[in-house]
Image (cartoon, rainbow, N blue to C red; front, side, top):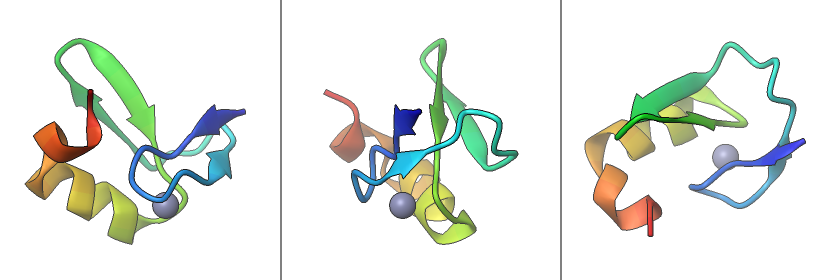
Length: 46
Ligand SMILES: [Zn+2]
């Protein structure tokens, strides 16, 4: 399991809902979180 960086929920890394950012892959519980991450990636990546 991995953590959705937007809402901090645990998600399965087999999910198709993911995004690449600075060479890392992030996984999301929903397309809403994915969309929010894409809009404001810096806010969610430390
Ligand atoms: Zn989420």
